[in-house]
Length: 151
Image (cartoon, rainbow, N blue to C red):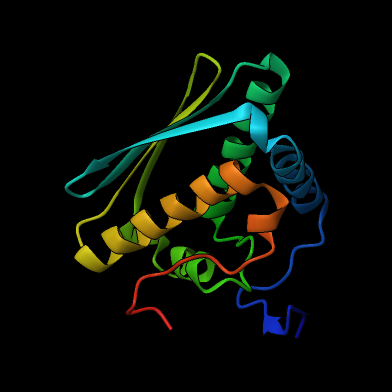
């Protein structure tokens, strides 16, 4: 079983062309994280988040990244499955509603769920994405914050 930082990939490790493209987009966003901005509105059942960039090229990368992640999520093709938070997102994917739309300079995402535990998971994922925007590759190296119920 493949591992990263001694932790196993719980949903496999992608090596196909789509995975390489998704990883390249993610790396570009981490590399240029200072040019990104993220705002979150907490909802009773989840979040609405807007991630934008004043750099038109980076805004397009952001939109392409979100489209790729939406496809991966829908197909159950995990990314960062060594990270308990991301593994859990894929384990509970059928109980989390995700809506994305392109907005000027970026994307807006609405993630909601009915189960309070999954709402905690959504909030932890949001904290993780704020970390990626704030710290770039440094945040990408760490395990994500996660709810207490998630081992």
